[in-house]
Image (tube, rainbow, N blue to C red; front, side, top):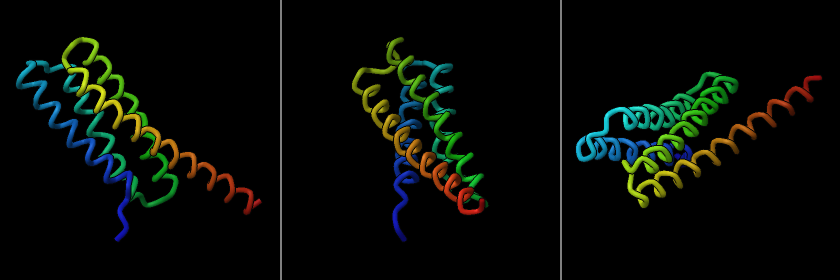
Length: 125
């Protein structure tokens, strides 16, 4: 079976989110921002997983759109935790780069879905 790059990359990112969350709670005693980060970060992978198993192309695109929104929110929490000194620069950069990479992949997939929907409508017309 062929590897699905967005599934693999989003799952790997979620693992990093969970590991970072555990450090923030245990070592930094940060419970509010880290919880928001955990929720939005893990939601990316959950929505990608749901998209892969979506019953329709419309649902597929919808779930990826939610994953993209969660990705944008996660990037916000990473920046905020860095600026408030809960995340060290290296960790913030690492997480931020992964988040940006996921964002680009999700945007590309959604763009392709939109193009296919437009082309399908042209064929039907």
